[in-house]
Length: 154
Image (cartoon, rainbow, N blue to C red; front, side, top):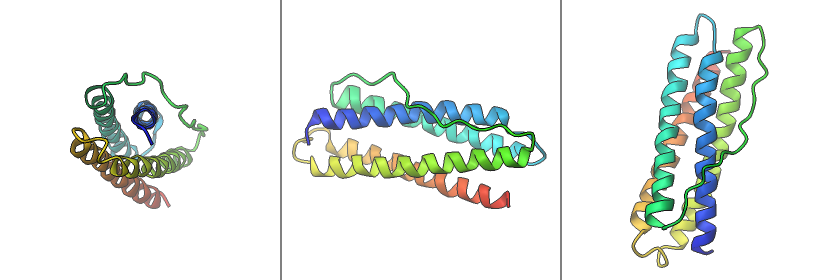
C-alpha cells in the first residue's frame, strides 16, 4: 500500500464522519415520545464525538500526510418516519448501530494498514496509530450504547 491509498482511505473515513454527524443531529430532531429526552441527548453527544473524529481525520490527512481533506460526504441512510414513536426510535437506533459497526470494521482496516506502513510513516506513525485507535474505541463505545438503548426499547 502507498501513502496515496492511505490518504484515500482516510478521506473516506472523513466522509463517513461527515455523514454520521449530520445523521445523528437529524435523527435527534425526529425522535419523539415519552422516552425521547435521554435518546435525543445521547444522539447529540454522539454527533459531537463524530465532529471530533472529523477534526482528527482532517489533521491526519492535511498536517501529517500533507494532502487535501475531503469535503464530501457518504450518502447517509434514511429513516422511514412512522406515526408510532417507538418504531421511529427503534429504526433510528438500528440504523445508527449498523453504521457504527460498519465504521468500526472500516477503521480497523485503516489501522491495520497504518501498522503495516510503520516504516514508511516514520514521522507520522505514532500519532496516526494513536488517533485511529481512539476513533475505533469511540465507535465501539457508541455501538455498545446504541445496542443497549435498542434493547431498552423492547
